Length: 108
Image 1 (cartoon, rainbow, N blue to C red):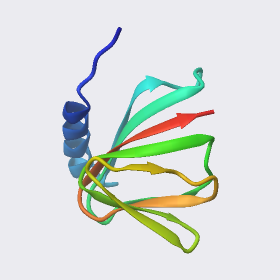
Image 2 (cartoon, one colour):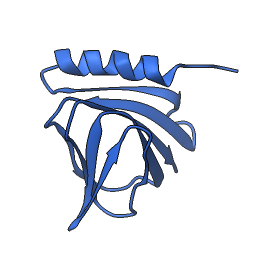
Image 3 (cartoon, rainbow, N blue to C red):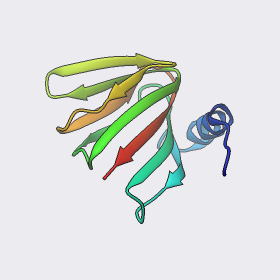
């Protein structure tokens, strides 16, 4: 059994993102390329984004802190702390409205 504080990981990743020239940071906390399930905490500073990309499999994100926009085509969904967003099976991007940290879960 492994236990992690998502609040602490999110706080750490936000500090790293603030110090990074890219304005982002991430840490995989469970799984990886050798597993069918992967969970990653991603932090973006306000105004930064993850460019449009394909969906690698079933995926959700849970906003841990801040506010973001999930964009797919002409559709846009906003999420704030505590919100669960199901990532569409289509090209999409994520934009940080505020400094944001979220848990991305992908099942391949």
